[in-house]
Image (cartoon, rainbow, N blue to C red; front, top):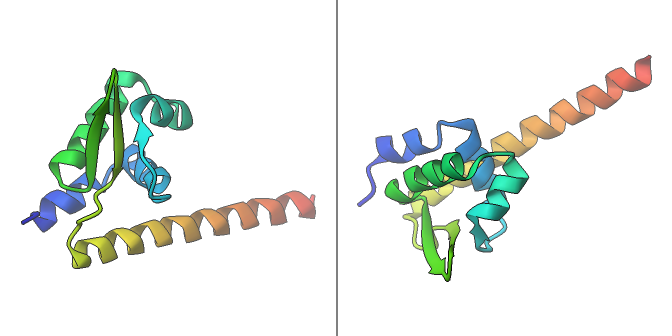
Length: 108
């Protein structure tokens, strides 16, 4: 059983949240993809993914020299709902920020 405080702690870091947004597509992503998309070093990205894996948020699979990660498919329903709510809130905030920036740009 996954500890709620460990789960929430794993989601409390911006890079890990951004990684989870990418993994929300349901596909596997290797560390090299995540590094490129999030502008992170290999060691930093691997460390963040290890935290997410230890918390039970993601699973990994070795594929030759790559490690591929995906959102844990068997996450408890209540934790899955929390993760969905967090990602939805982040997406909504980003959409508001983009709209606000566009409005300011058009006002000048």
